[in-house]
Length: 313
Image (cartoon, rainbow, N blue to C red; front, top):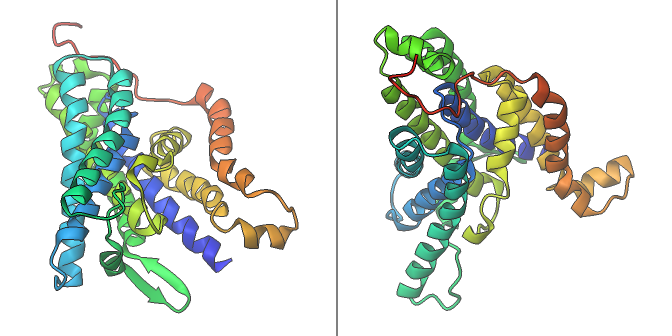
């Protein structure tokens, strides 16, 4: 049971960060379904940072630098969506799909090139960063606490404050609801939408880092992030684009995802004797069921996905 709680918190942390990233982007009016690809690039940046930072780097400095690099990598990659959707009015769904395909491809090619240059015997798409991962962990008895659990909770609270209690958040939401009205009172809609996309990239990149440091023991880039970007989109929709609701939804989805990691003990506890593949599919099946019932009543920002035309009223 303790292991189930641990994995639930880990996966919920990933989903909270990435879903909040999508929330900021869509509140600004830009649909970001490229979260999967952004997570991969953020994870790549963090993994390479952990690999190449000097072995004697203090743990606290290691954490800060790895987080910073992952965030910057996610922001840089998300900027492709921002430029295409905001500057060139490209179809946001197609661009997001392209990011999801491009992210893992870039990661695999880059890591294999690095492994080849370093004459690694098994030229795979795996980066060795196991030792540095321990900097993020604190052992509380038999419970493995990861600092990202606390970071995700703090970002969740900060997101609520930023979106609903600050001038920036209210302006961002206005650009996703009525961009023409926002422009009429002097708000730079283009700038606010770029800000939303970059925040989305930062949180998506950080979510990718959490996934590889806490969610898996070894990560191959061609496997991506196991659909967590799409699960985060389901969490965002189920949470109705509201940070607190997103947090609650993330714990629910995190629980179902955690069951696939500890299914042996859980199956023995409830005496179901289900195959492991059922537990692996469970979070995705649940997401489909949830979206079927929630999508009709969802209240997405009215102007999301609609290119802003300054001359249109």
